[in-house]
Image (tube, rainbow, N blue to C red; front, side):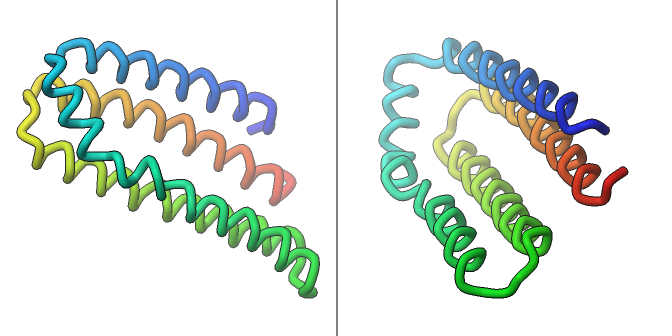
Length: 133
């Protein structure tokens, strides 16, 4: 799959998933929305640390080692995929523990599944570019 198509599909699916997630949030009361904000306040504060570490690692390893660029990119993208999966599992478990309505949880899961499909398509496009397919 050409990287340009993969990037377009990635952006389109992430935006669609975000829109569906926002629609799901409209089902909640103000109190339920506040509960979500409170429950995830620590994640918002510290959630980007792994991404910053991966980004910094990319530049440090790329500059100070003999690792090939392709190997480094695969390592960094593997780290990002791991972070995304762990974060998704954590979010899902925490949302269910908050006792939110099942209709909201289902719509939220569908929205995130669409976003993950976009991420998967992007990684397929990247893999195609790496492997020159």
